[in-house]
Image 1 (tube, helix red, strand yellow):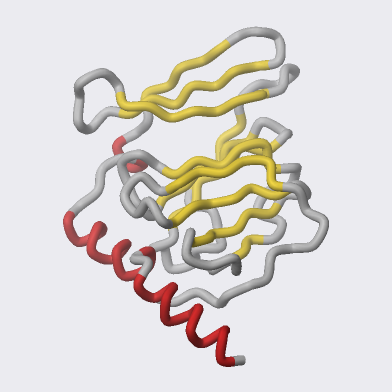
Image 2 (cartoon, rainbow, N blue to C red):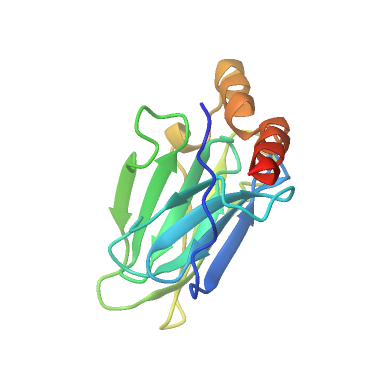
Length: 170
């Protein structure tokens, strides 16, 4: 389950960054123009890039707080698109949902729901001053031991070292 290294796209500004809560060396970067990239703090090369990840510009990107391979992308058309790096096609979303019709979402954050170890919240802030708080479904937060091990195989920083050594030899 490796990823191909990709150079950072020239001239694309970063709009949002999110570090993986399970693998802190791994982070996602949202780029203007509707793209996103997966990075490690050990390399300046993107490990994977998703061009055209949404139909609009990416406003915000966030890792799931409960599942290490899952992340959410908010675009400027108020769609939140969910991706899973462990799915058969990690470039395709596993879920898409639209929020708001007239107003624009300006911020999207995730948090634990109090002291509960398995409940997480998504909060949305709108340009009209409103906020929404939603309880996330178990499918977006429940992680098995097998899933954690599979995610470790994809997101563990050790393969990044091997990739960096290979790139340095070119």
